[in-house]
Length: 329
Ligand code: PEP
Ligand code: MG
Image (cartoon, rainbow, N blue to C red):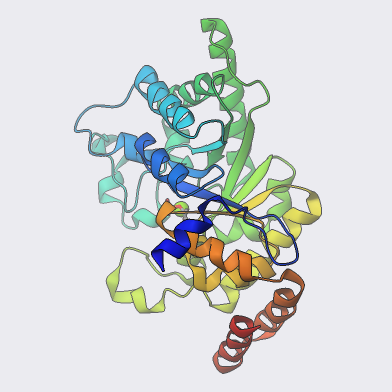
């Protein structure tokens, strides 16, 4: 079975009806690019940069150190695009050297709803500008996109874009080259973002759906709390509708959209996502060939019809029946 999968590595990811599907990798460190390339990924859809910042004791990676890490990821991908997500700390990913007395994070009553991800970055503009300059500098060496986690408000998007413009000015002043047309995208991982999508479509170049957090926030299930893990359900109709709505509206607006949460790497959900119109997946490299196998077997127009039944089902037994038909089609 593994040998059979390995043979798929160089096969283009294309459905039976000829739709090209981009299968990208999620990485946490620049070294992971090797596994991404080995699995046949056509890019990095999510570089979780917070892992560069975590477990460093009292040390905060400076601009040059970060630049070096981003440069190595770009080099490692050999010309394939690398989507770098700005730091997403908080909740399950604490920073050792955060000043607890200043931001009160460690004692936050509910870290998942607190100062995490872009909220944290906007509260630490010097740290954020340092990261943005490092990313911009690396963009002169290969294709890079910037991805922003946990946005919900128009004001946050605007502040973020202003800081990116400021980081570009700082690079100009320092004489650093960078991609002047670098694309900036948002994670769609808060239900508010999915529902108020035009706010994002009007301001950003691309979107990436973070299903891990989208499920957590839609169902009010702390993804780090085992006591409620049995209620964490990617197939809840509310979750499916938010994903489907986001894919449809982004497509209508001509804004590229991918899925980079765990759902994208689950071969049991590949048909479902294809049938909702997804053409770009990003996942752990170890999942890539299994998902590709599902892509190669799928016929989109057929799958689409069954996905309509899935989306129309609100009763668990109907939903399960529609999903079984989708599996067999
Ligand atoms: C997500 O929320 O789905 C996601 C990809 O981001 P993370 O798992 O890093 O929060
Ligand atoms: Mg997330």
